Amino acid sequence: MVQHQIVRAFAPATASNIGCGFDILGFALEQPGDEVEAWERAEEGIEIVSISGDAGRLPLDPQRNTAGVAVQALLDATGCRRGVGLRLRKGLPLSSGLGSSAASGVAALRAVDHLFGLGAPPELLLQCALEAERVACGSAHADNAAPCIYGGFVLIRPGDRPEVISLPVPEGLACAMVRPHVEVQTRAAREILGDQVPLSAAVRQWSNVGGLMVALFRSDFELLSRCLHDAIAEPKRAALVPGFAAAKAAALGAGALGSSLSGSGPSIFALCTSRRQAEAVAAAMAEALERQAQVSSDRFVTTVGAPGARILAESPSDG
Amino acid sequence: MVQHQIVRAFAPATASNIGCGFDILGFALEQPGDEVEAWERAEEGIEIVSISGDAGRLPLDPQRNTAGVAVQALLDATGCRRGVGLRLRKGLPLSSGLGSSAASGVAALRAVDHLFGLGAPPELLLQCALEAERVACGSAHADNAAPCIYGGFVLIRPGDRPEVISLPVPEGLACAMVRPHVEVQTRAAREILGDQVPLSAAVRQWSNVGGLMVALFRSDFELLSRCLHDAIAEPKRAALVPGFAAAKAAALGAGALGSSLSGSGPSIFALCTSRRQAEAVAAAMAEALERQAQVSSDRFVTTVGAPGARILAESPSDG
Image (cartoon, rainbow over all chains, first blue to last red; front, side, top):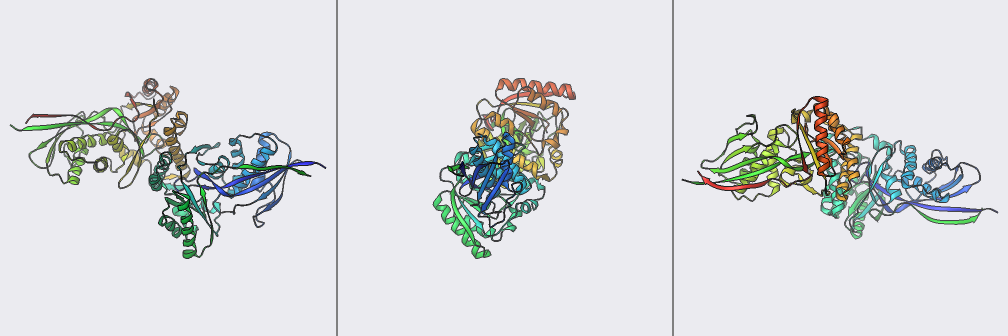
């Protein structure tokens, strides 16, 4: 009888774009998240033995699954030739704008890195996660994978090796998140943007990115509120989410600092000055979605910039 | 014999855009600057009695001169019906990318505000200066007028009433500025940009604006250096300034953190970690311009974010 070590890792949902920060801002949520169990198997190669919580929609083929692609990239990068078994528990809904594909990849990376004692630095984990994002989304943007790995609220300078910059989070800042029960395909949401934007809108966007940074450093909620506007993506993507305008208006009416799509949607976040306010805001958003668009939703409240992916348990078990 | 009070005000040159901050970033220089003398005259209306330092190029007609337009806007806004005489001493070269038109307007505003004890807040002075910028440049951007009024290093959120946000300046940060003896018309430099930009370039730009803000707050010179890139305007405008590429390369070779056009050029700034470094960088830039493009230049070194416009003297004199 062989003792197998099983490592279980968690990777959180992430909000990205955050109003003005298209492709460059993201933060980790407390929950929900994905869990991955990893263990060594006798043969080389990666086997995904099961996926739960995805209603059977994700491929077990490791070359087509973000967890498989990410782990293969990590094994290649570290010259590790050991075989890996993986079990995925999706806590995150697919195509929800909460970084589902990144979370599976990152949880698997953390688990395998720990299992084999690879000691991969976060920069390498990010590179591997982005390989997987390319498979899932057709393009590699780090605004989900980076906060998922690093935790907190991060600014990304894109590039072949994206730079991840941790941002300060004002005390009390909380996030109300509502996930409407509709799906938005990341690819489609990206194509709708086109590849050119008006210079005047771009100038508004980067002035708001600058102002948002100042607001975070100075804990200036009023400035933060003025800067939480998306001049680029939200105007085009809002139509993909029935009831978005009503939910956003409800959030602002309930006192939120600002509200926009998380990632490419359909999830809608609102930043708030306290968890208590965020509870009321989330309820108001969900109610507006139901009333205006007959769309049901999940909702939750979280701190802004929760910890990133981490090991939950490692247990020797009978093989 | 009537005693006339004469108020003399100074308004500094300003650097704008600052690499990634097209239309939203600017800082005041120590020198050069414009001076305006203002006094009350018996008849209503504004008279510009003389302009020196402009080689006769600026109009004395107050409706076509930024000083006249700015002061008229201030008198209108405050309901002041007194007559004003103005004398302008241009210390700033025209069409140099150093905020020449803004400086004349702002110096006149400061002088007249003080002369009549109007107590106009900076927000109002900015509105009046922007009226004048519209006359001078065909469009009103606050990235020269705002640092000229407020001093320091500022972030602007554009709009009908632009918001001006003061930024921290890391200790030691200095600016080398070289003004090649060529002219770039602000209007032409703006038209060359077109009104659409690639989304990918815009994303790089706002990631760098975000990173630059973080660098200023954390006094992180390395990050600041990485973020001092202009993906939008410099690539198109560089060709308008003979020798620009050589001057920029010389600046970086001499250790500058970054270098780009000031405003729409032709002036070229480089940010440095000390005044001493900035002296060497300015000399290297000037030498490169001369060698590569046979363009002579003025150069000077200044702190980043010097004080804004101010009263130099008020003197009763015989009328």
